[in-house]
Image 1 (cartoon, helix red, strand yellow):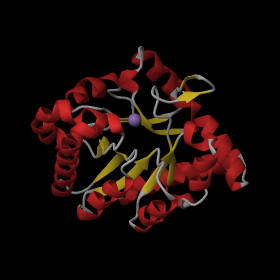
Image 2 (cartoon, protein in one colour):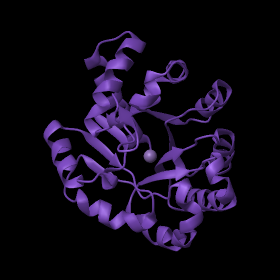
Image 3 (tube, helix red, strand yellow):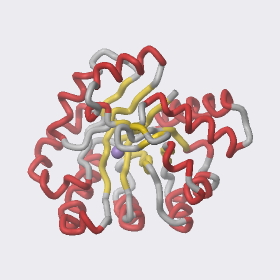
Image 4 (cartoon, protein in one colour):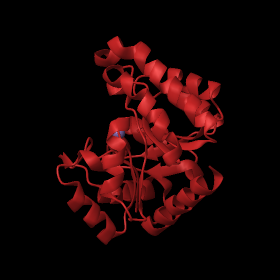
Length: 243
Ligand code: MN
């Protein structure tokens, strides 16, 4: 099982969650929301091969934390994974829009200078702007659009630009999400939970809830669950090799 976007550090009991991930063999991309969270989050899974920590700067905190860009720059060499970064166009974050753009652009430039990264990107209500920025910084690395919820036209554009997609249980439950997922290239899909922020069956999502996505992808692609698992695993190897 592969959870390519999970906030392990934001669970109440990260050590227990990590132990359970190891027991169940869940590979996790442990994303962070601020540069100052990087060291502590990395320490949580030190020595665990199946858990990788990404250096992030969440658009929803970009305005308050813009002072952490220097810290971001000092850490960017330490990992090949960046995220969660991006833009959020929701009304409640509009006041900080200019700072969001500054932070996102700064980070993509830093990724370009550092040889290309694997980047988990948030694009809620801001897909066109996110894609414009990625196009402008196309040497930043391999972009994985996490929880994509934009239009079909923008999805086509993202596919043409070479973006990847990570799919979570909340997305694959709805009609719109399912219709979008059916258009995504099978060899550029990864699974995620976005735990603890998303819910599965009315409770907080855990990394092993990836199983829910596997079940639904199997139905959507009309293949068996083992086939879905091996496809996602193949995709993970591919993104690691090509990036
Ligand atoms: Mn997230």
